Length: 346
Image 1 (cartoon, one colour):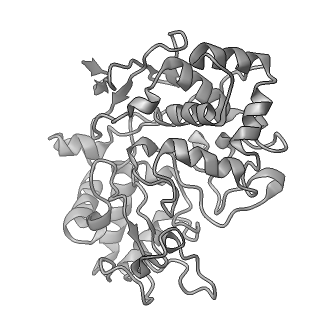
Image 2 (image 1 turned 180 degrees about the vertical axis):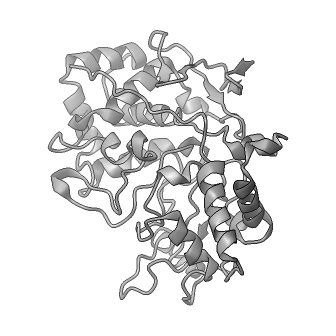
């Protein structure tokens, strides 16, 4: 089945109708199956039976994602930090939660988050459902546990009705997590010039972007970590970012203390639509792609745990400029959409 030049991926019998402009169009009742289009360059999602996609879950999840009432002071929603207009990040160095509290890490994009096996920069969550619990309870983010959020939602008649229709029962922490995770699985972007180039459309990349493509894949170490359909290996690497600080962020090591090699290691981010998601690195320390390219061309920042894949790369100024063009033009998805804010239940 073809959908606007892309394949529509049926996910275990589920059905989704997708708007070319504003994201998912929900035309079915609660409990109805839901499927997501698979743009050129990505593969079909593998959805577990524990949380099969349905129209009701996605609709509820979208509302909950945008609803600030899921935060302690009703000021902050998931969308406050994950703004589609800012690459599903927030355009700032750090995340900002309730009371204006700042976090210590850059907000990871949610682009193609359903294709990731580990969530957060340190990989502490292994599923989107598990991921939802962390920002909810964090004092620097929502500061409202999902159990507290469920109690709050069950006092809102519209939400009570929606949860009853979808789950035959009230809101619970687990059901909130399932709904938000379901909505996040619809944030899919690909069908970029790079994808069309790889399928044989040589004209899809400009001459500069094509030269940058060759630098990326054949003349540098970029593709060692940024590979596969989502342009990430999903693994953790120490690139030296922040390791010159008196007390550097230990990243993955704080989650998996049995592995000394993971000191200062952070997850490889997707490069899809990377031009939308500035600033860069886990600490938001690099503001532009030009700075990122320069950082890696110098071989990162030396420290005892620097990943062996990181080394200086001999690139001319033209090479660097072409690489930025490839990252900017070549990886910008034609399937990227900015959904309208939903009407929240009352």
